[in-house]
Image (tube, rainbow, N blue to C red):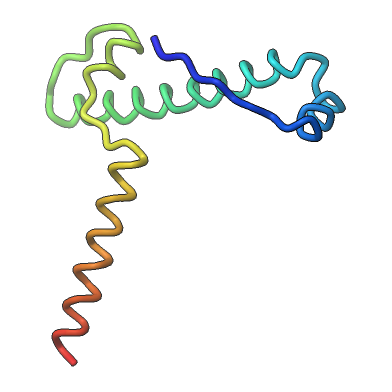
Length: 95
């Protein structure tokens, strides 16, 4: 299990209080809802991949997510930057 901490300025805390009865509950709900959406997307992708490969679909959603070979946002960003740098180098070499 992971634990994260968020720090709000006094102005941010006051502003959030305008739209949230409890800032902590609002933050918890926002993060958990985003995680739920990501889990649904990962599970759907994995189910389609397994169906196409003729593989059995087993386990809970959490187990499917944990077993899935996924690219994190940081990994995706690094890959995209490397691809862009390679394209730029190719273009510069061709000039």
